[in-house]
Image (cartoon, rainbow, N blue to C red):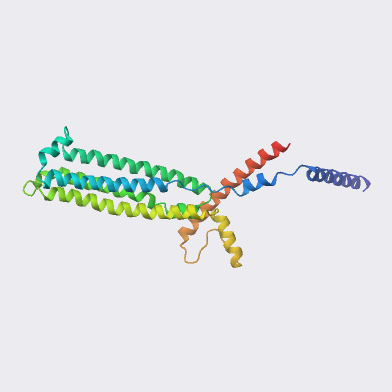
Amino acid sequence: MERNSRIDSSGDLTQSADEDCFLDAPLLPSQKLQSVIRPHFHPVPTVCISILLALINLAYVTLAVVAFYFCLFSGKKKECNQSVAPFNLSTVLVISKLILWLLHVVNERFAHHHHCKAKNKGFLHLYRSTRHLKGLPLIIHSTGNAALLLILSVQDFFSSNRQLYPCLILSVLLLELIVSVICLIIYTVRIYRFNKRKPRPDIIEEEKINAYEGHVNPEIGFRHRASLEEVVEKQGDTIEYLKHHNALLSKQLLALTSNQD
C-alpha cells in the first residue's frame, strides 16, 4: 500500500510538473493564430477573363458578318478575295473559329483550376453552383464547330442557292454568340458577387446561421427538400475540406511552436 501510494504520488508530481511546463511555455502570438484560423479572402480571378472572352466573341461575329456582307452581298468579291489572299473567306473563318475555340479551352481550364482552389479553401457551394456553368461556353462552341464543319462539308449542295450557304453559317455563329455570351454574363455576375461579398468558408457560414437561428442540423450538408445525392455529395466535399484544413492547421501550428522553441 505504501509503495503504491508512493508511485501514485510520484506520478502526480510528474504530471503536475508537466502541466507546469506547459503553463510556463511562451504563448503563440495572437496575430499569427488569427492569420492561421482566419485566412485572408482570395477572390476568384476569372471575371476579367470572362468579360474579355465575351468581347472577343462579339468582335469575331461582327467581323464575320461584315466580311460576308462585303464579299458576297455588296458585289466587291474581287477586292475581298485580294484582302484575304492567299486564303479564301471560308478558310479565314475556320482558322479564326479554331483560335476562338482554343481560347475557350484555355478559359475553361483556367476557371477550373481556380474553382478547385476555392473548393479546397471551403467554398463548396460556389464550386457546385458553377461546376457546369463555367464549361458551358466551351460545349456551345464545340457544338458550333461541329455544325459549321457540317455546313462546310455540304457546301456543294448550295450551288443553286448561293445566299443560303452564308446565311446558315451566320445563323450558327449568331446563335453560338448569343448563348455563350449569356452563359459568360451569368457566370461573371455570380463570381463578381462572390468576390464582392468576401464570404468565409461554407462550414463557418453555416455554423453562424445555425447559431443565429438557434438550432443545429443533425448532419453535415442536411437541407430540407434536399435529395439524398446532394446530401452525400456535400458531406463528402465538407469532410474533404475539413481534412485538408486540419492538416494545414497542424503544419502551421507545428511550425509556429518550433519557432517559439
